[in-house]
Length: 315
Image 1 (cartoon, rainbow, N blue to C red):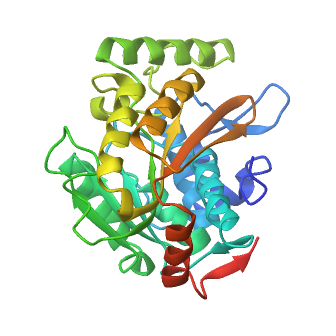
Image 2: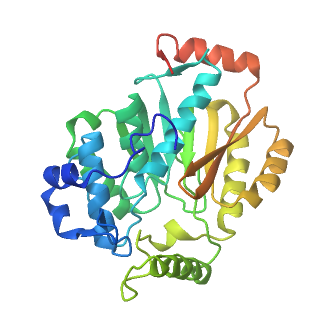
């Protein structure tokens, strides 16, 4: 994990259950006697993550309707820390912090996870977008339950589900970052197969087989779209080229490493000035994000001078 990730060590279940007693009924013992939860139980997974949000980040009322994606918090945090490092590379090693930095979270979800983590760790402001009005209402309820977030996070409904950036980025608006966890699968059937494979892995580790397959949940639009991850990020690249001067760094998680090469080719054709792929690892899981900018060195320097002056802190 990233060295600034708060989740380096084993989960401290004694502390977590003390701060969120509702987690206690879900704590079990592993064969070697260590406390854990059944990661094949969606309710247990959600309760653990709720406890982590309350204990590690001070977020109250982090709950959302059943069936929506429950994000694995350590991995989501790594993405944000990697983006912070990306900003620091252009800023003399200093991470720009505070409300001068504004990030666009594409598909913020019912959990509103990236704005919550990003604001707590770096003080950034966020605009979160969604095509699902129920998910947006859930995110709004979480923000309302935490007074310190109300001025830091704005939520917007994307009125056209075929678009990603267009329609939510306003004329003249500027974002220092965009971030996104795109739908991975290309169809509902493919998503179901992927969930079955995950469940088989959980079954081999001793989890009960009678539970729902998607232990981390996920509605259809969270799991699949036409063209899958490659199609979604490809569409994002097309739209980003039309908003080239509106964003310092565009970015997206990329689950399938084989997608990097064609996406980089598309970015080259679109005129990206700089492209970076950043590897991440949480245990045995390997992931990465792709970042690109259409701003040349002079434009980036002017952007930093205008927006980041006084916002840096050494890494």
